[in-house]
Image (cartoon, rainbow over all chains, first blue to last red; front, side, top):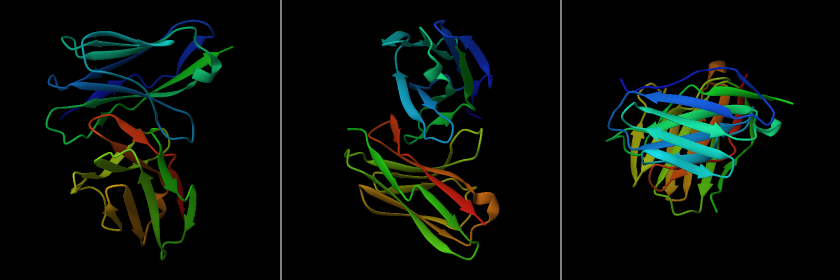
Length: 112
Length: 110
């Protein structure tokens, strides 16, 4: 069974520090990896996507992909209270007809 | 523009009612999705319309029925729902694997 796993948290990080969120996946053939941010009561918002091994940076966010170890991570630098949310990892396995497999999400709390 | 719109934002319905949720996108995406999300859970896929072909999550009860009038619109028809169907209903669209979500419809079934 195809699975995506995340630590449910909550992960508590002081304001200004680096928040590190991790995700592992079971299907080694997966090609596309996504991080979504979801505020309470709102819909998921795409933060980053990554297809290739290595790092991808966008502002304060860095996605890291290691296909050999089957994990993807999201780093948030200079964490702000507005970053407090649930972060969902999603993976597109092969032959999935554009469907995503979702992790359960990690709740991140940035403490002022 | 990565906008997906959904109406209504909130809906309260009785168990004997029939209602519809509407979703629209103008990004030229060829795949659209309905998800159900309960509190503190990830989105659960209900239906996918991809290149005019419908894929169904077999665990979704028949009281939910999707309709795709054209490539920009996706409706979800609701009939004889149960209180446990109360949830946030999310529509998304994608050109390939990157999905963009609408704001959702908060549904309460009494």
